[in-house]
Length: 542
Ligand code: UN1
Image 1 (cartoon, protein in one colour):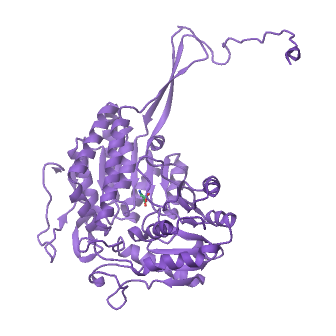
Image 2 (cartoon, rainbow, N blue to C red; image 1 turned 135 degrees about the vertical axis):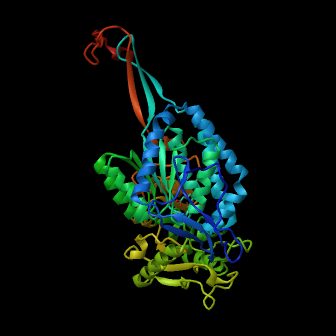
Image 3 (cartoon, rainbow, N blue to C red; image 1 turned 120 degrees about the vertical axis):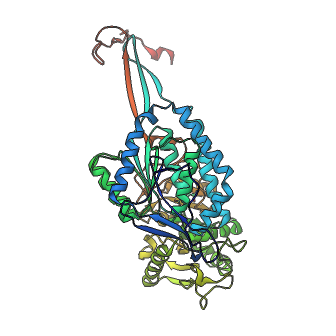
Protein backbone atom coordinates (compact mmCIF):
# COMPACT_ATOMS: atom_id res chain seq x y z
CA UNK A 1 0.00 0.00 0.00
CA UNK A 2 1.26 3.46 -0.84
CA UNK A 3 0.40 6.62 1.02
CA UNK A 4 -1.02 9.22 -1.34
CA UNK A 5 1.76 11.69 -0.62
CA UNK A 6 4.66 9.25 -0.75
CA UNK A 7 4.65 8.93 -4.50
CA UNK A 8 4.35 11.02 -7.63
CA UNK A 9 1.86 10.28 -10.37
CA UNK A 10 2.19 7.01 -12.20
CA UNK A 11 2.08 7.23 -15.97
CA UNK A 12 0.81 4.50 -18.25
CA UNK A 13 3.45 2.87 -20.41
CA UNK A 14 2.15 4.39 -23.59
CA UNK A 15 1.15 8.00 -23.37
CA UNK A 16 -1.37 9.35 -25.87
CA UNK A 17 -0.52 9.62 -29.59
CA UNK A 18 -0.21 13.39 -29.22
CA UNK A 19 2.18 12.93 -26.29
CA UNK A 20 -0.22 14.08 -23.59
CA UNK A 21 0.16 12.18 -20.31
CA UNK A 22 -2.06 9.25 -19.44
CA UNK A 23 -2.02 8.30 -15.79
CA UNK A 24 -2.87 5.32 -13.70
CA UNK A 25 -5.52 6.54 -11.30
CA UNK A 26 -6.37 5.23 -7.85
CA UNK A 27 -9.01 5.44 -5.20
CA UNK A 28 -7.75 7.12 -2.06
CA UNK A 29 -8.96 5.25 1.00
CA UNK A 30 -7.59 6.05 4.44
CA UNK A 31 -4.84 8.07 2.74
CA UNK A 32 -3.70 5.05 0.71
CA UNK A 33 -3.75 4.55 -3.04
CA UNK A 34 -6.02 1.61 -3.85
CA UNK A 35 -7.07 -0.17 -7.02
CA UNK A 36 -10.50 -1.70 -7.46
CA UNK A 37 -10.88 -5.02 -5.64
CA UNK A 38 -12.56 -6.28 -8.84
CA UNK A 39 -9.55 -5.25 -10.93
CA UNK A 40 -11.67 -3.40 -13.48
CA UNK A 41 -10.96 0.10 -14.73
CA UNK A 42 -12.52 2.77 -16.91
CA UNK A 43 -11.00 5.56 -18.96
CA UNK A 44 -11.43 9.31 -18.81
CA UNK A 45 -11.50 10.90 -22.26
CA UNK A 46 -11.01 14.52 -23.27
CA UNK A 47 -14.36 15.45 -24.86
CA UNK A 48 -12.66 18.05 -27.07
CA UNK A 49 -10.21 15.46 -28.37
CA UNK A 50 -11.51 11.93 -27.91
CA UNK A 51 -8.16 10.35 -28.83
CA UNK A 52 -6.71 11.98 -25.71
CA UNK A 53 -7.15 9.71 -22.69
CA UNK A 54 -6.40 11.25 -19.31
CA UNK A 55 -5.97 7.89 -17.65
CA UNK A 56 -7.43 4.72 -16.25
CA UNK A 57 -9.33 4.71 -13.00
CA UNK A 58 -10.69 1.97 -10.75
CA UNK A 59 -14.22 0.81 -11.32
CA UNK A 60 -15.01 0.46 -7.64
CA UNK A 61 -16.97 -2.45 -6.25
CA UNK A 62 -19.33 -2.63 -3.30
CA UNK A 63 -16.40 -3.92 -1.23
CA UNK A 64 -14.32 -0.84 -2.13
CA UNK A 65 -17.17 1.49 -1.19
CA UNK A 66 -17.57 -0.30 2.13
CA UNK A 67 -13.83 -0.08 2.79
CA UNK A 68 -14.01 3.68 2.19
CA UNK A 69 -17.02 3.97 4.52
CA UNK A 70 -15.17 2.04 7.23
CA UNK A 71 -12.16 4.37 6.85
CA UNK A 72 -14.43 7.40 7.19
CA UNK A 73 -16.13 5.86 10.24
CA UNK A 74 -12.76 5.14 11.93
CA UNK A 75 -11.43 8.62 11.24
CA UNK A 76 -14.56 10.31 12.59
CA UNK A 77 -13.94 10.39 16.38
CA UNK A 78 -10.52 12.01 16.24
CA UNK A 79 -11.47 14.42 13.45
CA UNK A 80 -14.62 15.47 15.31
CA UNK A 81 -12.47 16.02 18.42
CA UNK A 82 -9.91 18.15 16.52
CA UNK A 83 -10.53 21.80 17.46
CA UNK A 84 -12.63 23.52 14.81
CA UNK A 85 -10.03 26.31 14.32
CA UNK A 86 -7.46 23.61 13.49
CA UNK A 87 -9.84 22.04 11.00
CA UNK A 88 -10.27 25.55 9.57
CA UNK A 89 -6.50 25.97 9.29
CA UNK A 90 -6.21 22.81 7.18
CA UNK A 91 -9.03 24.12 4.98
CA UNK A 92 -7.15 27.43 4.67
CA UNK A 93 -4.05 25.48 3.58
CA UNK A 94 -6.19 23.79 0.93
CA UNK A 95 -7.24 27.20 -0.41
CA UNK A 96 -3.63 28.39 -0.54
CA UNK A 97 -2.50 25.22 -2.33
CA UNK A 98 -5.32 25.59 -4.85
CA UNK A 99 -4.05 29.11 -5.54
CA UNK A 100 -0.52 27.81 -5.95
CA UNK A 101 -1.56 25.04 -8.37
CA UNK A 102 -4.44 26.96 -9.97
CA UNK A 103 -3.05 27.05 -13.52
CA UNK A 104 -2.45 23.29 -13.56
CA UNK A 105 -5.83 22.47 -12.06
CA UNK A 106 -7.51 24.73 -14.60
CA UNK A 107 -5.80 22.99 -17.50
CA UNK A 108 -6.66 19.53 -16.19
CA UNK A 109 -10.29 20.58 -15.74
CA UNK A 110 -10.49 21.95 -19.27
CA UNK A 111 -8.78 18.88 -20.68
CA UNK A 112 -11.08 16.54 -18.81
CA UNK A 113 -14.53 18.14 -19.29
CA UNK A 114 -13.98 20.67 -22.07
CA UNK A 115 -14.98 23.83 -20.19
CA UNK A 116 -13.16 26.90 -21.51
CA UNK A 117 -9.97 27.87 -19.68
CA UNK A 118 -11.58 31.10 -18.54
CA UNK A 119 -14.55 29.26 -17.06
CA UNK A 120 -12.41 26.57 -15.45
CA UNK A 121 -10.42 29.44 -13.90
CA UNK A 122 -13.66 30.90 -12.52
CA UNK A 123 -14.68 27.57 -11.14
CA UNK A 124 -11.38 26.80 -9.41
CA UNK A 125 -11.61 30.31 -7.94
CA UNK A 126 -15.02 29.35 -6.53
CA UNK A 127 -13.38 26.37 -4.79
CA UNK A 128 -10.65 28.70 -3.42
CA UNK A 129 -13.28 31.20 -2.22
CA UNK A 130 -15.07 28.37 -0.44
CA UNK A 131 -11.88 27.34 1.39
CA UNK A 132 -11.08 30.90 2.40
CA UNK A 133 -14.61 31.46 3.66
CA UNK A 134 -14.66 28.29 5.77
CA UNK A 135 -11.14 28.69 7.07
CA UNK A 136 -12.39 31.42 9.41
CA UNK A 137 -15.77 29.77 9.91
CA UNK A 138 -13.70 27.21 11.85
CA UNK A 139 -12.99 30.03 14.32
CA UNK A 140 -16.71 30.70 14.64
CA UNK A 141 -18.96 27.65 14.34
CA UNK A 142 -20.87 29.49 17.01
CA UNK A 143 -23.30 28.06 19.49
CA UNK A 144 -25.35 30.17 21.88
CA UNK A 145 -25.71 30.70 25.60
CA UNK A 146 -29.41 30.88 26.37
CA UNK A 147 -31.12 32.16 29.51
CA UNK A 148 -32.91 29.55 31.58
CA UNK A 149 -36.39 30.12 33.04
CA UNK A 150 -35.00 28.79 36.35
CA UNK A 151 -32.36 30.37 38.61
CA UNK A 152 -28.85 28.90 38.89
CA UNK A 153 -29.20 27.03 35.65
CA UNK A 154 -27.51 27.62 32.27
CA UNK A 155 -28.53 26.60 28.76
CA UNK A 156 -26.25 26.19 25.75
CA UNK A 157 -26.44 25.17 22.11
CA UNK A 158 -23.61 23.43 20.25
CA UNK A 159 -23.21 22.44 16.61
CA UNK A 160 -22.30 18.76 16.37
CA UNK A 161 -21.14 16.86 13.28
CA UNK A 162 -23.44 14.27 11.70
CA UNK A 163 -20.86 11.53 11.08
CA UNK A 164 -20.01 9.97 7.71
CA UNK A 165 -21.16 11.97 4.68
CA UNK A 166 -21.60 10.43 1.20
CA UNK A 167 -20.77 13.04 -1.44
CA UNK A 168 -22.03 12.63 -5.01
CA UNK A 169 -21.69 15.42 -7.56
CA UNK A 170 -22.03 15.95 -11.31
CA UNK A 171 -19.07 16.59 -13.60
CA UNK A 172 -20.23 20.01 -14.86
CA UNK A 173 -18.76 21.76 -11.81
CA UNK A 174 -16.19 19.15 -10.83
CA UNK A 175 -14.10 21.31 -8.49
CA UNK A 176 -16.41 23.99 -7.03
CA UNK A 177 -19.38 21.76 -6.23
CA UNK A 178 -17.54 18.98 -4.35
CA UNK A 179 -15.76 21.73 -2.39
CA UNK A 180 -19.14 23.38 -1.64
CA UNK A 181 -20.06 20.08 -0.02
CA UNK A 182 -16.90 18.65 1.53
CA UNK A 183 -15.36 21.85 2.92
CA UNK A 184 -18.30 22.71 5.21
CA UNK A 185 -18.72 19.00 5.96
CA UNK A 186 -15.18 18.62 7.29
CA UNK A 187 -15.21 22.07 8.89
CA UNK A 188 -18.13 20.83 11.02
CA UNK A 189 -16.14 17.71 11.98
CA UNK A 190 -17.67 15.15 9.62
CA UNK A 191 -15.74 12.69 7.47
CA UNK A 192 -16.57 11.94 3.83
CA UNK A 193 -16.69 9.31 1.14
CA UNK A 194 -16.57 11.15 -2.17
CA UNK A 195 -17.86 9.31 -5.22
CA UNK A 196 -16.13 11.19 -8.02
CA UNK A 197 -18.11 11.92 -11.20
CA UNK A 198 -17.22 9.29 -13.79
CA UNK A 199 -16.29 11.98 -16.32
CA UNK A 200 -13.81 13.91 -14.16
CA UNK A 201 -11.80 11.32 -12.21
CA UNK A 202 -8.35 12.84 -12.83
CA UNK A 203 -9.44 16.18 -11.46
CA UNK A 204 -10.97 14.50 -8.38
CA UNK A 205 -7.76 12.50 -7.86
CA UNK A 206 -5.68 15.68 -8.11
CA UNK A 207 -7.93 17.64 -5.74
CA UNK A 208 -7.99 14.86 -3.14
CA UNK A 209 -4.21 14.66 -3.23
CA UNK A 210 -3.98 18.43 -2.73
CA UNK A 211 -6.33 18.16 0.25
CA UNK A 212 -3.98 15.63 1.85
CA UNK A 213 -0.99 17.82 1.03
CA UNK A 214 -2.73 20.58 3.00
CA UNK A 215 -2.52 18.45 6.14
CA UNK A 216 -5.81 16.54 6.01
CA UNK A 217 -5.47 13.40 8.16
CA UNK A 218 -5.99 10.01 6.49
CA UNK A 219 -9.55 8.78 6.29
CA UNK A 220 -11.23 12.19 6.62
CA UNK A 221 -11.92 12.34 2.88
CA UNK A 222 -11.94 9.06 0.96
CA UNK A 223 -12.19 9.12 -2.82
CA UNK A 224 -13.81 6.36 -4.82
CA UNK A 225 -14.12 6.27 -8.59
CA UNK A 226 -16.71 4.50 -10.66
CA UNK A 227 -20.05 4.85 -12.34
CA UNK A 228 -23.27 6.24 -10.90
CA UNK A 229 -25.11 2.94 -11.21
CA UNK A 230 -22.14 1.12 -9.63
CA UNK A 231 -20.13 2.84 -6.90
CA UNK A 232 -22.66 5.67 -6.59
CA UNK A 233 -25.51 3.23 -6.08
CA UNK A 234 -23.47 1.21 -3.54
CA UNK A 235 -22.92 4.40 -1.57
CA UNK A 236 -26.66 5.15 -1.55
CA UNK A 237 -27.47 1.51 -0.69
CA UNK A 238 -25.17 1.83 2.33
CA UNK A 239 -27.71 4.28 3.81
CA UNK A 240 -30.09 1.30 4.18
CA UNK A 241 -27.29 -0.58 5.93
CA UNK A 242 -26.84 2.17 8.52
CA UNK A 243 -23.34 3.09 7.32
CA UNK A 244 -24.00 6.66 6.18
CA UNK A 245 -25.23 9.65 8.18
CA UNK A 246 -25.68 12.13 5.35
CA UNK A 247 -25.90 12.16 1.58
CA UNK A 248 -25.17 15.29 -0.38
CA UNK A 249 -26.08 14.99 -4.03
CA UNK A 250 -26.01 17.29 -7.05
CA UNK A 251 -27.54 15.86 -10.20
CA UNK A 252 -30.82 15.00 -11.87
CA UNK A 253 -34.22 15.34 -10.23
CA UNK A 254 -35.08 11.67 -10.83
CA UNK A 255 -31.91 10.37 -9.12
CA UNK A 256 -32.36 12.99 -6.37
CA UNK A 257 -35.87 11.73 -5.64
CA UNK A 258 -34.59 8.14 -5.38
CA UNK A 259 -31.84 9.25 -2.95
CA UNK A 260 -34.38 11.30 -0.98
CA UNK A 261 -36.58 8.22 -0.60
CA UNK A 262 -33.73 6.04 0.65
CA UNK A 263 -32.59 8.73 3.10
CA UNK A 264 -36.16 9.48 4.16
CA UNK A 265 -36.96 5.92 5.15
CA UNK A 266 -33.78 5.81 7.23
CA UNK A 267 -34.23 9.30 8.73
CA UNK A 268 -30.85 10.26 7.25
CA UNK A 269 -30.30 13.86 6.24
CA UNK A 270 -30.06 14.53 2.48
CA UNK A 271 -28.95 17.67 0.65
CA UNK A 272 -30.38 17.51 -2.86
CA UNK A 273 -29.42 20.05 -5.52
CA UNK A 274 -31.30 19.05 -8.63
CA UNK A 275 -32.37 20.24 -12.07
CA UNK A 276 -33.69 23.57 -13.27
CA UNK A 277 -35.65 25.12 -16.11
CA UNK A 278 -34.51 28.58 -15.22
CA UNK A 279 -36.71 31.40 -16.52
CA UNK A 280 -35.38 34.77 -17.65
CA UNK A 281 -37.97 37.52 -18.29
CA UNK A 282 -37.30 40.46 -20.60
CA UNK A 283 -39.55 43.53 -20.13
CA UNK A 284 -39.79 46.50 -22.52
CA UNK A 285 -38.12 48.94 -20.09
CA UNK A 286 -34.91 46.87 -19.98
CA UNK A 287 -31.62 47.97 -21.46
CA UNK A 288 -31.77 45.78 -24.57
CA UNK A 289 -28.05 45.36 -25.25
CA UNK A 290 -27.41 44.35 -21.67
CA UNK A 291 -30.38 41.96 -21.67
CA UNK A 292 -29.33 40.33 -24.95
CA UNK A 293 -25.85 39.77 -23.59
CA UNK A 294 -27.21 38.32 -20.34
CA UNK A 295 -29.62 35.96 -22.10
CA UNK A 296 -26.98 34.82 -24.57
CA UNK A 297 -24.45 34.08 -21.84
CA UNK A 298 -27.05 32.38 -19.61
CA UNK A 299 -28.16 30.13 -22.46
CA UNK A 300 -24.93 29.25 -24.22
CA UNK A 301 -22.03 29.93 -21.82
CA UNK A 302 -20.63 26.60 -20.51
CA UNK A 303 -22.47 25.05 -23.52
CA UNK A 304 -25.64 25.44 -21.43
CA UNK A 305 -24.35 22.82 -19.01
CA UNK A 306 -24.86 24.63 -15.72
CA UNK A 307 -27.81 23.82 -13.52
CA UNK A 308 -28.31 27.58 -13.50
CA UNK A 309 -28.30 27.87 -17.32
CA UNK A 310 -31.20 29.63 -19.01
CA UNK A 311 -34.15 27.40 -19.88
CA UNK A 312 -37.23 29.47 -20.78
CA UNK A 313 -36.53 32.93 -22.18
CA UNK A 314 -39.79 34.83 -21.58
CA UNK A 315 -40.07 37.97 -23.70
CA UNK A 316 -42.78 40.65 -23.52
CA UNK A 317 -44.72 40.72 -26.79
CA UNK A 318 -43.93 44.39 -27.47
CA UNK A 319 -40.22 43.60 -27.92
CA UNK A 320 -40.45 39.91 -28.85
CA UNK A 321 -39.37 40.15 -32.48
CA UNK A 322 -36.71 42.83 -31.98
CA UNK A 323 -35.15 41.02 -29.07
CA UNK A 324 -35.01 37.72 -30.90
CA UNK A 325 -33.40 39.41 -33.89
CA UNK A 326 -30.65 40.91 -31.76
CA UNK A 327 -30.12 37.65 -29.87
CA UNK A 328 -29.93 35.64 -33.10
CA UNK A 329 -27.14 37.85 -34.43
CA UNK A 330 -25.03 36.68 -31.51
CA UNK A 331 -26.18 33.06 -31.67
CA UNK A 332 -25.34 32.77 -35.38
CA UNK A 333 -21.80 34.03 -34.81
CA UNK A 334 -21.04 31.86 -31.76
CA UNK A 335 -17.41 30.76 -31.60
CA UNK A 336 -17.12 27.11 -30.60
CA UNK A 337 -14.03 24.89 -30.25
CA UNK A 338 -11.36 23.46 -27.99
CA UNK A 339 -10.26 26.25 -25.70
CA UNK A 340 -6.88 24.52 -25.13
CA UNK A 341 -6.18 25.14 -28.82
CA UNK A 342 -8.15 28.31 -29.65
CA UNK A 343 -8.61 31.60 -27.86
CA UNK A 344 -11.94 33.30 -27.27
CA UNK A 345 -14.29 30.39 -27.84
CA UNK A 346 -17.63 30.88 -26.11
CA UNK A 347 -18.00 27.21 -25.45
CA UNK A 348 -16.32 23.90 -26.01
CA UNK A 349 -17.58 20.34 -26.27
CA UNK A 350 -20.27 18.60 -24.25
CA UNK A 351 -18.97 17.23 -20.94
CA UNK A 352 -18.80 13.74 -22.44
CA UNK A 353 -20.39 11.50 -25.04
CA UNK A 354 -23.13 10.57 -22.55
CA UNK A 355 -24.17 14.21 -22.11
CA UNK A 356 -24.17 14.60 -25.89
CA UNK A 357 -26.53 11.65 -26.32
CA UNK A 358 -28.90 12.93 -23.65
CA UNK A 359 -28.88 16.36 -25.28
CA UNK A 360 -29.78 14.94 -28.69
CA UNK A 361 -32.69 13.09 -27.06
CA UNK A 362 -33.88 16.35 -25.48
CA UNK A 363 -33.68 18.16 -28.81
CA UNK A 364 -36.03 15.56 -30.26
CA UNK A 365 -38.50 16.53 -27.58
CA UNK A 366 -38.34 20.17 -28.74
CA UNK A 367 -38.81 19.13 -32.36
CA UNK A 368 -41.77 16.91 -31.50
CA UNK A 369 -43.48 19.53 -29.36
CA UNK A 370 -43.99 21.79 -32.40
CA UNK A 371 -41.75 24.66 -31.28
CA UNK A 372 -40.41 26.83 -34.13
CA UNK A 373 -36.69 26.11 -34.57
CA UNK A 374 -34.74 29.29 -35.32
CA UNK A 375 -31.26 27.85 -35.17
CA UNK A 376 -29.28 24.67 -34.53
CA UNK A 377 -28.50 21.44 -36.24
CA UNK A 378 -27.61 18.82 -33.64
CA UNK A 379 -24.08 17.50 -33.42
CA UNK A 380 -21.35 19.43 -35.21
CA UNK A 381 -19.47 17.41 -37.82
CA UNK A 382 -17.16 18.42 -40.65
CA UNK A 383 -20.11 18.60 -43.06
CA UNK A 384 -22.43 20.24 -40.58
CA UNK A 385 -20.78 23.08 -38.74
CA UNK A 386 -21.57 26.68 -37.85
CA UNK A 387 -19.48 29.43 -39.42
CA UNK A 388 -17.35 30.13 -36.36
CA UNK A 389 -16.47 26.61 -35.39
CA UNK A 390 -12.71 26.38 -34.86
CA UNK A 391 -10.74 23.18 -35.45
CA UNK A 392 -11.86 19.71 -36.46
CA UNK A 393 -15.28 18.89 -34.96
CA UNK A 394 -14.88 15.16 -35.54
CA UNK A 395 -12.21 15.06 -32.85
CA UNK A 396 -14.67 15.82 -30.06
CA UNK A 397 -18.34 16.00 -29.07
CA UNK A 398 -19.57 19.42 -30.12
CA UNK A 399 -23.12 20.72 -30.47
CA UNK A 400 -24.69 23.56 -32.37
CA UNK A 401 -26.39 26.28 -30.33
CA UNK A 402 -30.16 25.75 -30.57
CA UNK A 403 -32.98 28.25 -30.32
CA UNK A 404 -36.67 27.30 -30.30
CA UNK A 405 -39.27 30.08 -30.43
CA UNK A 406 -43.05 30.31 -29.97
CA UNK A 407 -42.91 27.77 -27.18
CA UNK A 408 -46.05 27.62 -25.06
CA UNK A 409 -46.89 26.37 -21.62
CA UNK A 410 -48.70 23.40 -23.14
CA UNK A 411 -45.52 22.03 -24.76
CA UNK A 412 -43.38 19.41 -23.06
CA UNK A 413 -40.19 21.31 -23.90
CA UNK A 414 -41.45 24.22 -21.74
CA UNK A 415 -41.28 21.96 -18.68
CA UNK A 416 -38.26 19.72 -19.32
CA UNK A 417 -34.70 20.70 -18.46
CA UNK A 418 -32.53 20.58 -21.59
CA UNK A 419 -28.95 20.18 -20.43
CA UNK A 420 -26.90 21.71 -23.22
CA UNK A 421 -26.77 24.66 -25.62
CA UNK A 422 -30.50 25.15 -26.27
CA UNK A 423 -33.05 27.70 -25.16
CA UNK A 424 -36.84 27.78 -25.49
CA UNK A 425 -38.45 31.19 -26.10
CA UNK A 426 -41.93 32.05 -24.83
CA UNK A 427 -44.02 35.16 -25.58
CA UNK A 428 -45.65 36.98 -22.64
CA UNK A 429 -48.66 39.29 -22.97
CA UNK A 430 -47.78 41.44 -19.96
CA UNK A 431 -45.89 41.34 -16.68
CA UNK A 432 -48.48 39.21 -14.89
CA UNK A 433 -48.36 36.67 -17.70
CA UNK A 434 -44.56 36.69 -17.68
CA UNK A 435 -44.50 36.01 -13.94
CA UNK A 436 -47.06 33.26 -14.38
CA UNK A 437 -44.90 31.63 -17.08
CA UNK A 438 -41.77 31.97 -14.95
CA UNK A 439 -43.54 30.01 -12.23
CA UNK A 440 -45.19 27.46 -14.51
CA UNK A 441 -42.38 24.90 -14.86
CA UNK A 442 -41.94 22.13 -12.29
CA UNK A 443 -38.58 23.58 -11.22
CA UNK A 444 -37.47 26.50 -9.04
CA UNK A 445 -33.70 26.84 -9.02
CA UNK A 446 -32.53 30.11 -10.57
CA UNK A 447 -34.52 32.90 -12.25
CA UNK A 448 -33.91 36.40 -13.60
CA UNK A 449 -35.59 39.51 -14.98
CA UNK A 450 -34.36 42.42 -17.05
CA UNK A 451 -36.40 45.55 -16.34
CA UNK A 452 -35.82 49.16 -15.39
CA UNK A 453 -39.18 49.38 -13.67
CA UNK A 454 -38.50 49.06 -9.94
CA UNK A 455 -42.02 47.95 -9.11
CA UNK A 456 -41.82 45.14 -11.69
CA UNK A 457 -38.47 44.03 -10.26
CA UNK A 458 -39.97 44.05 -6.78
CA UNK A 459 -43.05 42.09 -7.89
CA UNK A 460 -40.87 39.59 -9.70
CA UNK A 461 -38.60 38.88 -6.77
CA UNK A 462 -41.53 38.59 -4.39
CA UNK A 463 -43.74 36.57 -6.76
CA UNK A 464 -41.25 34.08 -8.20
CA UNK A 465 -40.88 30.65 -6.61
CA UNK A 466 -37.15 30.02 -6.95
CA UNK A 467 -34.11 29.67 -4.74
CA UNK A 468 -32.19 32.37 -6.61
CA UNK A 469 -33.14 35.47 -8.61
CA UNK A 470 -31.05 37.88 -10.67
CA UNK A 471 -32.28 41.40 -11.37
CA UNK A 472 -30.77 42.81 -14.54
CA UNK A 473 -28.39 39.88 -14.57
CA UNK A 474 -28.21 36.42 -16.11
CA UNK A 475 -29.48 33.28 -14.36
CA UNK A 476 -25.95 32.00 -13.68
CA UNK A 477 -23.02 33.14 -11.59
CA UNK A 478 -24.00 32.61 -7.95
CA UNK A 479 -21.24 33.72 -5.59
CA UNK A 480 -19.59 31.34 -3.13
CA UNK A 481 -20.99 32.93 0.03
CA UNK A 482 -24.72 33.24 -0.79
CA UNK A 483 -27.12 30.33 -0.27
CA UNK A 484 -27.34 28.16 -3.41
CA UNK A 485 -30.25 25.83 -4.07
CA UNK A 486 -33.83 25.60 -5.22
CA UNK A 487 -37.44 24.85 -4.44
CA UNK A 488 -40.07 22.65 -6.17
CA UNK A 489 -38.41 20.03 -8.42
CA UNK A 490 -35.00 21.65 -7.95
CA UNK A 491 -34.29 20.31 -4.49
CA UNK A 492 -35.45 19.55 -0.99
CA UNK A 493 -34.85 23.02 0.42
CA UNK A 494 -31.32 22.47 1.70
CA UNK A 495 -28.71 25.04 0.69
CA UNK A 496 -25.04 25.00 -0.24
CA UNK A 497 -22.55 27.81 0.47
CA UNK A 498 -22.10 30.57 2.98
CA UNK A 499 -23.19 30.23 6.58
CA UNK A 500 -26.46 28.57 5.52
CA UNK A 501 -24.79 25.31 4.45
CA UNK A 502 -23.61 24.72 8.02
CA UNK A 503 -27.20 23.70 8.86
CA UNK A 504 -26.85 20.84 6.36
CA UNK A 505 -23.74 19.31 7.96
CA UNK A 506 -24.39 19.72 11.68
CA UNK A 507 -27.16 19.21 14.17
CA UNK A 508 -28.03 21.41 17.10
CA UNK A 509 -27.29 19.97 20.51
CA UNK A 510 -29.09 21.69 23.40
CA UNK A 511 -27.37 21.32 26.79
CA UNK A 512 -28.64 22.47 30.17
CA UNK A 513 -26.39 22.78 33.21
CA UNK A 514 -28.22 22.69 36.56
CA UNK A 515 -26.02 24.47 39.11
CA UNK A 516 -28.50 24.78 41.98
CA UNK A 517 -27.76 21.33 43.38
CA UNK A 518 -31.44 20.39 43.40
CA UNK A 519 -34.08 19.16 40.97
CA UNK A 520 -35.89 22.18 39.54
CA UNK A 521 -38.76 21.27 37.24
CA UNK A 522 -38.99 23.26 34.03
CA UNK A 523 -42.39 24.90 33.48
CA UNK A 524 -43.57 23.75 36.95
CA UNK A 525 -41.11 25.32 39.38
CA UNK A 526 -40.96 28.59 37.49
CA UNK A 527 -41.82 31.62 39.54
CA UNK A 528 -45.15 32.96 38.38
CA UNK A 529 -45.61 36.73 38.20
CA UNK A 530 -49.16 37.80 38.90
CA UNK A 531 -50.69 40.86 37.27
CA UNK A 532 -51.08 43.69 39.72
CA UNK A 533 -54.81 44.25 39.56
CA UNK A 534 -55.73 47.83 40.04
CA UNK A 535 -58.63 49.75 38.48
CA UNK A 536 -57.10 52.52 36.41
CA UNK A 537 -59.19 54.69 34.16
CA UNK A 538 -56.81 55.49 31.29
CA UNK A 539 -59.57 57.39 29.50
CA UNK A 540 -58.93 60.31 31.84
CA UNK A 541 -55.66 60.83 29.91
CA UNK A 542 -57.31 61.06 26.53
C1 UN1 B 1 -23.99 24.00 -11.00
O1 UN1 B 1 -24.29 24.17 -12.18
O2 UN1 B 1 -24.18 22.89 -10.43
O3 UN1 B 1 -24.13 29.85 -10.21
C2 UN1 B 1 -23.34 25.04 -10.15
C3 UN1 B 1 -23.40 29.31 -11.06
C4 UN1 B 1 -22.12 28.65 -10.59
C5 UN1 B 1 -22.39 27.32 -9.96
C6 UN1 B 1 -23.22 26.39 -10.79
N1 UN1 B 1 -21.47 29.52 -9.62
O4 UN1 B 1 -23.69 29.29 -12.25
